[in-house]
Image 1 (cartoon, rainbow, N blue to C red):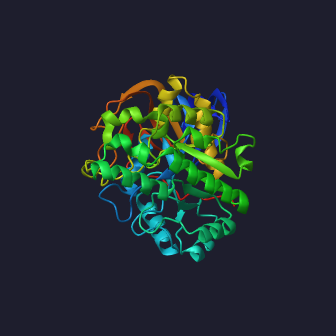
Image 2: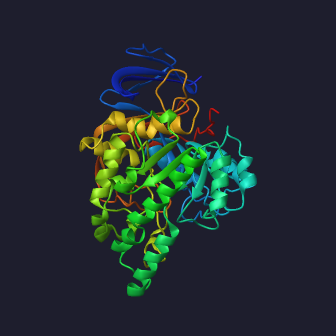
Image 3: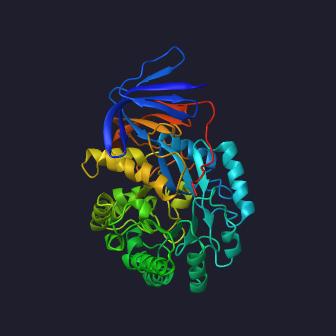
Length: 445
């Protein structure tokens, strides 16, 4: 049996930072104590000066497989997760074909079983006409239903009010939604196309995908959830105004309506469009510094429950197109945790709160079994970080298949040094294991 002993780490877990030793036997954490003596059959990791975190759980990624593998694959992007301390992910259904029936879902699981470097789960996609498929979802193996209420691909825009109400009424697992009002966006886009044609300056992206578009859609979804009793999770908030729609009056496990914010909305603002251009074109759009400040405030006071990446790679050639043709989205999984470690250094958030939002809370919200914490008996998904070691993001050191990052040129104070997945050392100071050790996530329902 594989045995690892992590000694002298500052363990960040459940709101505390305590120096502890952690013993791993096989796939699981077997003992946590102030001091654990090493035996001959144990591999010892000296973690002095480092912090030990539960493996991060990213609840929103787009790994582009099947159908869009020129941008990314489950294999390439999950390997980037390893280097970024993300040990589990939930992937989105807007691939080609879309993950909107049992056959497509099973095929994705089969690919991940062969190629994923980290633990995996896949959200099922809703459309205007697949309610019977939705009703057949297995709650033990499916984390949530994903609905696009704006900015969809294919036929995944769910815009029939009767269908929406029926889905919200019938589905008991979390319903994760992308909220932007499509009619508002169309009206705004038409206005700017009249002036600029297709080559709209990127600085107008947050004017087109506006605060109004976000707030209108989010508020409608929340009203419907309250009417039907649905368990609603609103993805990637981008405006300060939207944060007023959410509450911190209940602990997460008792909330029926929850929210997420993504790294790019916490890091960039509209002031960055001049330098970054379409490399920071996301849906919803990166908005003002005021919005960014409002998101930080809501994150810290627990109106926002989860931090995610919305990792969505495109090629540089695609990103170089004119505004109306350049796709939205960018790669982030390799650098999400280091960005948050830098934000800790800047005093924007505590390390304990980071772990709550990117490790504990995804496990709670999606009922992920025995992950997201440093606990005896739990799967040993663990990350060692050096908060003093700096790294500069360059095109040469990114692992994404698309080969670039919107963070290029940024120096971050904080580096992932080791990543352990299901008890096995997968990443050790820049070196990967010869093969992955990932599992399908299961859900306690």
